[in-house]
Image (cartoon, rainbow, N blue to C red; front, side, top):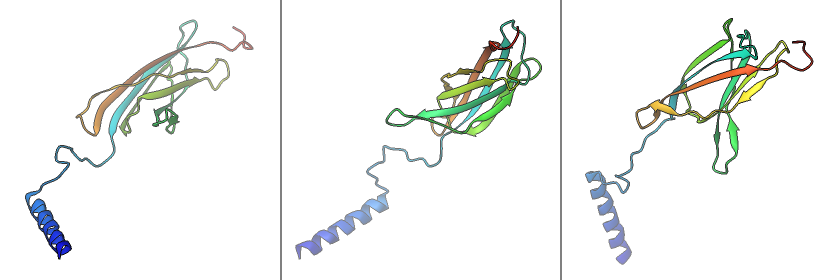
Length: 150
């Protein structure tokens, strides 16, 4: 008999709480979706004589650290420098990542590759799922390989 009364009270209490819209997590905001951001990368590649280098491959990728501190890298994106040594890329609806790896490769084999690992911060977001825009300016000065005449 006591069990029936308890079940009845619990059912009645659940019904009243449901009708009043009571939630034990009313102070927490629940959102669904995936964080997103816009990402802009730009820069210039020159040699040691400050001459712009054309057709240099720029490979960049974002990354994150898991709870144990292990780094995970996203799929890479590739850009190429123009005749002025400049590269530029803009990406929308990207997952916001703070860690980046940017590599400059000379496919002709004259210059050594170089890597930069900058951190990116975002601005202009809405304070929720949209982080705003992350901007990254990366400039390279590539050195000639030792086996190539200067």
